[in-house]
Length: 226
Image (cartoon, rainbow, N blue to C red; front, side, top):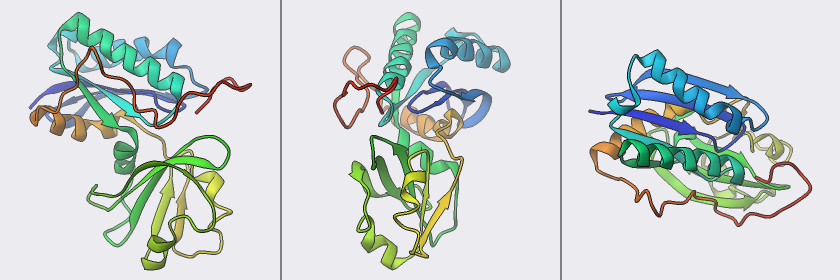
């Protein structure tokens, strides 16, 4: 049983929640053009106020560790670590794709493939069953017509997240490929995972913890490299 602040900044969604005993107590989020630096601290203040608590009341700070936007992850992790240091609270790290998979449920006979946009035709992805068990581990994948071929032969595979849109045309002829739009990582879906991690004492070393980038940062002309 714990009171945990959850921070999600791995994509364009800036999302903060407070969970108590695994249940949603407060939530503030905005899906924009990487406005995390401007909004994150304000969102944290808002959820603390919504929940009617003080930061010192928290039992832990949880952060979405990636994969995702290099800059977004840096902001989320540095903020979480700063809170842990100042409040003397433990740090919990949650895989972004894992909690994204909890955003929807398509029935027991469907597998879930959350996708986060990377560069060109590449995505960060993993596959989970309807119970949240990992079937295919997190990886950076360049999508082509042979991607997920074995799984798509066996049954329905649901693609979602901001990386799924660019895969639609590739799988257009496969009736087992299902796409659901407008699903983004949210700190509310971190709550059951951070509660479970806290109870299992699956905590991070605040001094040495780094985001899960999957790939090295590559500078380019765009404002954000994902």
